[in-house]
Length: 434
Ligand code: DLL
Image (tube, rainbow, N blue to C red):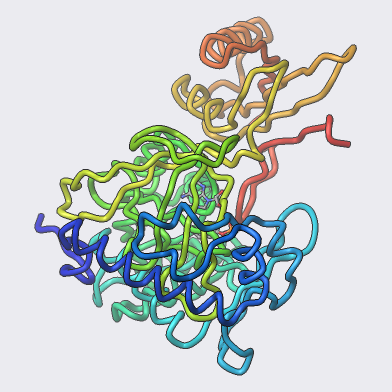
């Protein structure tokens, strides 16, 4: 099949061209924020860097980092670089602790965003004949309106279903002939499960592609969803602070996500030292926005862990590819000194034939951390005798121990006993934080 692009000349531009765009746009953005955002001016003055010091994209390392705390300190509009009258949309992210963070978009920013998500949609094969079913939440969350904008931009028939009401989602998907499904991977799995339970064969759906993101998920889960919904599943990444979904996008190669580098500069740093790491090495992902007018955040520390590579992709795109983030530094659990990401546990569960319906419970006993993993059994296992269930539990515990290097208590539980989410799944209960 011939590869399709939304903006071919940009998505496949030579690396020198991409870097030239980045240099020119970074210089301009730094000037703009220095002039218009007192908070940035102060930060740059404190770091002893002036706009004139930024002569190319390589000088980005001279700029100070921004982090979530800066957004909280300037809540709600303190980092906006244009007057509020030019801001046509606000989005916000709730976060688990502290105040919301608020971001703004000018008309031009929304056009950029539409292009970013349009590139994702077209990379999956979508076009004006597609029926794009958007089940990400609409509202202050960027998922719904982000994909919605891109879908309309490419002229697809856009179905703004938003999240929730699973039964209605399944009916609409069948009756409206949805060809592209956009939602979190955990919700895609739940839709598949519910359809199966109701005896709806996957042939009743016309789905060709799924655009799933907003939470960490594994390659194993991607295959599982593909099999169960009969579609090709693509990974999409983004965060509210940068633009929302469409910061980077998956293609048919499924080998990393293409960063929209004409709008964002990606860096990978050592989270301890703040120094850049080598290409291909894992570290904290940092983004700078180089075309946004209202909220052009620079060197934002995402706390997501991943790596980047610059070689040309087999799809023809030349944009850098970032790996699927394995989680945020703040999602990483430290169990008796060992670092554990929920996604590593998910990999083992799926490999061992379980569905990714699980919950990780961390606690302390006698001042030692304990790790328990509750996993749902499939209907086929549920009739098993206790002895067989015990055997399965120890088998899984053994696999987890060999991959993670820590002991985990595995509790197999009844099908449907773990709560499903319509948005981002809550996988971890850490009772140590109470
Ligand atoms: O989740 C934006 C989004 C909406 C992305 C729809 C993709 C699809 P936030 O709520 O601000 O924004 O959360 C951003 O979610 O820093 C990552 O930790 C995580 N995340 C997003 N996409 C992925 C992904 C939206 N594909 C945070 N894989 C980010 C892993 C992801 N984690």
